[in-house]
Length: 233
Ligand SMILES: [Zn+2]
Image 1 (cartoon, rainbow, N blue to C red):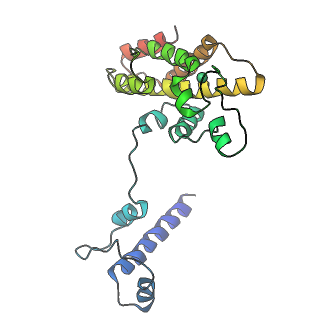
Image 2 (cartoon, rainbow, N blue to C red):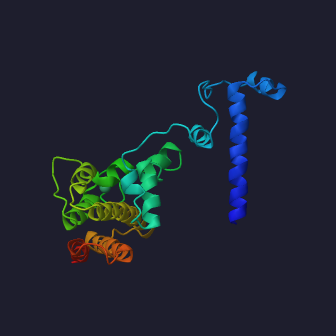
Image 3 (tube, protein in one colour):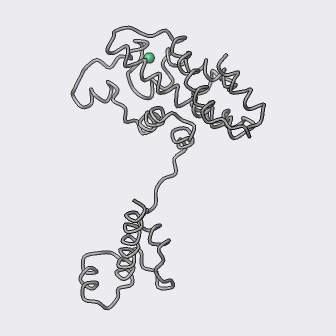
């Protein structure tokens, strides 16, 4: 397997060299032909081709998003991370999106029946999801402000935890919360019954603490270990 990876890597480097020749407009017939169809945005006369620069060029420019700590935190349960990513992109299939696609007409929130089944409402403007979210925030010692959007409070206050581990576990709690809100929403859709918020909160706490304990190492400070244990209470 390693030799295959090496082979692919070397092929990529060779390809990069060819691309560099294209950028430099080397006096080769095939390069001239390519230039008749391509732009020369990578061309830089002051440098020679390097694999590193070839990789950077291949990767391109991309936007740095504010939610990556939350969605792609290494403590997250993978299913929570995936759902967080979809929610951050607004890609989950709420009935608001399905209506836009002509699939359904009723867009009422399936949890509170007084809002719209949309990402914006479900996370965390919905009365039902606010109860769950607020409960978990208090548990991870994030002081809730009524005048602020819960996600904003979580982002600002979660960073004020003393240790990096605590901050990561706060992000794990947020990822687990949004996942379980989505599960509760789906339960309402398919079973026509709303799960009690306390039941959902209990599941979130068990998942977060269980995950933190799996990742915990002997080298962690005692106060962080105790903080994790207290989350289960
Ligand atoms: Zn609602």
